[in-house]
Length: 358
Image 1 (cartoon, rainbow, N blue to C red):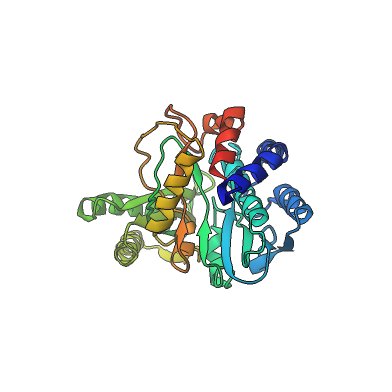
Image 2: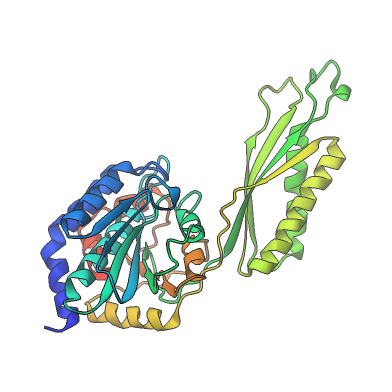
């Protein structure tokens, strides 16, 4: 048999177990950093498949690496398995994780005497801090020759791009007094936050079209009759180019500093420490994936414009050739990060697509 036939045979042979794992992860959603059920489920399966398993790689308690083979090339499949708070698997990471497992197991079993190493790399917490950033930082991908994963969606795109991304907390400190009897003695931290939003909204006209700035007020005071002495906002700032993103960050922070000056408050700026780089999809790998997906019988036609987000796979793509193709799992428009998309990710038809992608 040819290599592709062997891979197809291996996935067919493991089909029931793979789908069972994807269903189980969907029914037991865990937020980033707490994916102990998924970690245990996947690593036990891979150990039974003859993989050597290391848990806690990169200092992350729910990350893992499972490797088959020793010498030669080193191919890595990234496996995500975290869910969203309250929504569950509204991003389809139960599919992402098990497609990577299916691909890794099938490739490992098809090696024969060929010298090579196949690794499935468990990369948790994509929805929050982005574990791949820390795994790159700690050298997990240093000897990986090519890294792959996919993401489900409502359209198919092989050469995926993304926005570079940085997260900030802006905390204002003021002075609390009674809001009616002597407000002139107070320094309103919430007004600092509000003026920051106003400044950013005025800034938008002077930014490039690809820039995205979005935030929430995470602290706004405790009672309406007390001038808030502390208020905070969390912002995500994105752009295609990392250098330009740094310029935008400086302008956003300048808005906050101006707001602090105007309100007589003081400002504390904290970055998350997990910046995302823009994704650089390897064209050769993306073309090969497109050819292979068609050969595997995938024929779903869907071409909605899903816009650009940010992904921690962008960090991986800066240290090794990488792809994260987007593959449609429906012909309808179902927004991601919703209960509706989560429900879609637990159907027989979609599990078939997951295995086809693998």
